[in-house]
Image (cartoon, rainbow, N blue to C red; front, top):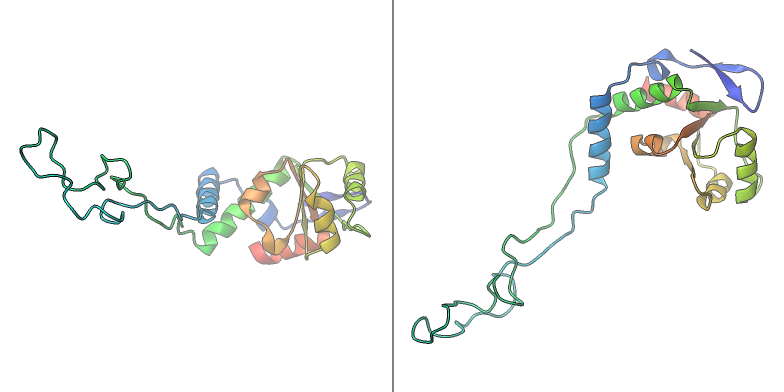
Length: 201
């Protein structure tokens, strides 16, 4: 498929195997959920009555006091006691193999291209890490809420976008499905297009 370049004349040819595949909603959903789940720390922890310190002695004798029987002051019914169903550290990771992940990425990128939300530029650089300069360049392309994908890490571009609302920058190696779906548009440099085709083909 052919796509016109932004901020310049000419067009670029995109591989149909990467930018022209059918949208698989179920696969995209599964991969996005798995990606977000992998980012969870899973470090929540509480103590059961057996783990709370103290409570080794029976508070009072079993019978004859007129009070309810009690075996430990660390019972979940008592203040300062353990938790009945205590949360424990857990791993939320879901298995997603490489073929599924790449298929979801192709599906998302192709859908963005079909909806004309995927833009291609020859390059995007800023001489110094100034947010206003980057906003000015993107404004000339008539894009605002955008994810900029470059072929390699650009420190100036990253620093310029860091404080800009609605603008994110990443290289191809740092690209993920959640980032693609979190912006209204995706601007890809021509160098990044070649890397995407080599990665996802």
